[in-house]
Length: 177
Image (cartoon, rainbow, N blue to C red; front, side, top):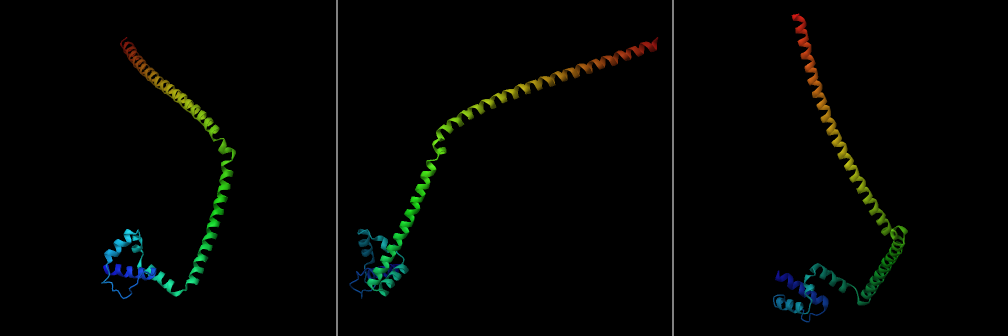
């Protein structure tokens, strides 16, 4: 692990052009001291850069001359500028469409419509309460009706029983005479 860190540091030094002693071996290098030095300068993020990225950066720097690299960077800036301008145009278009939507009469009337909706909600709640009361009254009526019918059925059954007994008594009396 210390060897990998040392390789990264040496590659970083070469890439940044701060290595004055190219003949220093990684075993001679004070890795911990260099890490503390970078951390004290707020550059500890450099050590987190993958070594492959550093090698590619070094190969790009070595393969192109400085003028060509400057030209490539300016092309990147121009490309980014056009991308930024495109995004700004999209944001402006969104803003104009948003203003159209927000200026719509429906949006302006939301508060008034909300009041109307509240009134309708209260009215609906009153109707539901009244309906529930009617349902309770109907249920009470049904219960009383059922009790009345049951009472009448019992009374009818009692009368039928008495009539049957009277008829039997009459037949017995007729049979005796």
